[in-house]
Image (tube, rainbow, N blue to C red; front, top):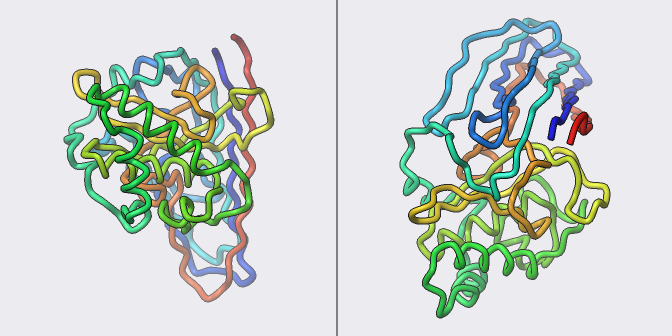
Length: 270
């Protein structure tokens, strides 16, 4: 499948800022399941800085803007060819040990409810791949997909207690559950062309990857009850949503900030 992406993020300030710095993780991953045909990332009025590929294999690029700054517009526009690898991350080069992803964060802190959910899901199941699938199914059943019911700082434990959330909550809850039973897991940011049932869905999407012994990293999307396929574009990863965020930045000044994001995906060829 060939997918075109048009992703624009705009920050508006009610008072001019003295300057801004942005760290962007907005570049498609390089692995057997996707090939970048063309891709351009830009910050309007900004100065492009250095870039590097981190230990997890993600490309990161820095940008800066000199003030006065009233608005920052970041765009990622391009075309990616994807193939279905059944969620398996083949051919992705990284140097971080999978076991580094057993580390908890505040967003994926494992409370008693998450631990109980995980242990119940895999009781009597020894095969690692089966355990991963059962964990994903348990999270899907426990947290209903309902946009607008949580916020950016909702933790996995809070989402489970609430019983509803969005893809970020599903991903972080699955990560916590996997770590609770000793399986390394991480958060993945990217794009999704459409939901499994064809219903409308936020194009900017998130899911989890679990390290499965003798196979490697495998993606699981509890929000859609499937593994990532050709409808998904993988961008970056991290311990949780904050670490894997496609855009991180800071602006110098006293003005308040307003954020607007638009993401559009179109299938050019299937």
